[in-house]
Image 1 (tube, rainbow, N blue to C red):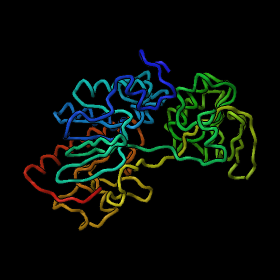
Image 2: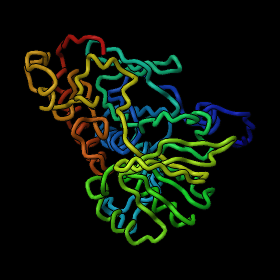
Image 3: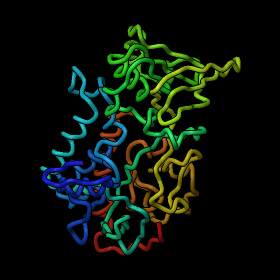
Image 4: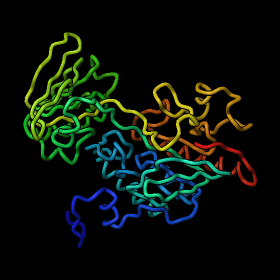
Length: 365
């Protein structure tokens, strides 16, 4: 692989990022605000934090934009009447955050967190540490693995998790998309303009409860998109690459085998919380972070350690905030995540003001 004047052999993501010249380690001994996750919520928080004078660092383990960054087209985002690709929206937000003074670390994963006296330390997989006075967790969700036989062997060889924007130009023939949410709908529409047929496998009995109406209308008027409701992917097969799949009708139990070389799974998600000890951050029954007044659904009022109510977006650990898809009861939409990132920064300001000249004891996160 050629990057500039360097030739890299089977490089890791971190090696590619370093070859491009992106920083992977913090440049400051301490920040006012550390944001983990560079999806729409994290990028928004970086823009607002930096623009309002906070020393801000944004840490992302993979790519800028999160799941939204791989979306082929977002058509309901305010101010873009013709729509905009997720990657372009994320690129613009990144440039804006950098221009305003935020520091962005790529290919940097927080593996654990520690809490000190009015400080939070995020230990990165590189061994470096990010020290800050407040944290916004915007790590979002990742697709739930189907754990099918042959999955590990065929992953990336015709079988994919996510929107598959980079693979779309390679697709031919009959393509399957698993899922009934907005990301699945956008993926199906993007692929339909390039291949003979797209089949969506949807576990529910319709799309109306999981998909935005504008996407339902587009899909309905796209003749080469087939929507199979009450259907599930049950098996995948192939020697070196995906060659065939088996699907099941959930109402009748009937199974169907189809030859295909392309499957994109955009179904279900789980919060990305590997970086912290979840026992010290209250979560709902599905594992999403409880914040603000919702905290008292997950912990008793006397377990909240301060004599004030939690601020909006604040978790059960004072000074640790959550925004975007990882937050319990969040609306899983790009524009909402952007708003939550901005709202979280407003609460960070309130928190930082509250700890001036004040010692607040905390425990390990």
